Amino acid sequence: MGIGSFIKKQFIDVLQWNEDTDGVLAWRYPMADQEIQNGGQLVVRESQVALFVNEGQIADVFGPGTHTLTTQTLPVLTNLKNWDKLFASPFKSDVYFFSTRVQTGRKWGTPQPITIRDKDFDMVRVRAFGMYSYRITNPRSFFTEISGTRETYTRDEVEDQLRGILMASMASSLGASQVPFLDMAANQALMAQQVKGDLTTAFARYGVALDEFNVASVSLPEELQAALDERISAGMKGGMSADKLAGYTKFQVANAIPLAAQNEGGLAGIGAGLGAGMTVGQAIGQAMGSTMAPATAAPAAPAEDSIEARLGKLKGLLDKGLISAADYDSTKAELLKKLIG
Image 1 (cartoon, rainbow, N blue to C red):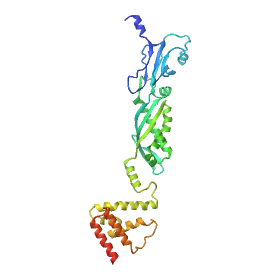
Image 2 (cartoon, rainbow, N blue to C red):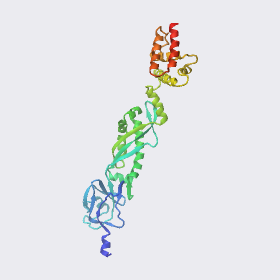
Image 3 (tube, rainbow, N blue to C red):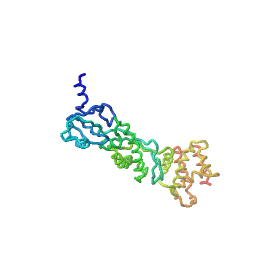
Image 4 (cartoon, one colour):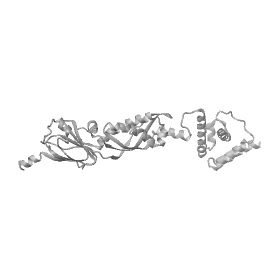
């Protein structure tokens, strides 16, 4: 190899990045011992930004296009190096390329439940999952805050940083939103809206713009979800007031009747739960009567036709399959005996 060829290889005429490795967001051009030819070409593609860095200081930034590198097109670098306007020699500088394409379909999730205050449940631990997309919009901030002088900086490395920011922002924004968990769970778009505003601000500090953010699912720890399901089934969302306690008791009695009918002993099993010495007919009568009277009213004396009404309700339980024919016949006989005397 001749001396001329050797010297020629020390100078770079064209700087460009082909993005031949998927998932790389920042890439430093390999200078080694080479220098950039004054008047050389910088090629920046549509989805890229190029950044010149001199001894750790950010100099000039170039958007998409083909740029001729001279003292006129590199004003900051020229000033940093104290070049004369007529400077025409090869020069050294680090050049970083950044991908500004939208990174779509990125998954997020809460590895551990996030504890937030809730006006319905005081404190709840929420888990959530979804998708988001982002892109680099400020390469200066991205370089100084995240990627630095590394040869490459990948999407996975960036998302390790963003994940912590996302979790912290989610906890603070949900906690400050005062939106009840039941409303968030019923409308996941509302939850996403509450988080996205704060998350956009947090990402911007690092030169990253949040493009899309959605919530695919919201859940509670199993033990809290079980308690919530029971309260929802009873039609309650708040504290246990006297009226709600009465309603909850009726709800439990109504659930107990079909369960007892399926077990050995049939409806007689209800008697043990409602008080010793109560007959099956009395248990059914009290359960039915309590649903008709206000929780604060005193027990009314049985009317002449109350037994007839009980017989009708008893027949309804049989028709719905909630009691067996044997239970129906025995209880009916007892009620008829009271009615006839």
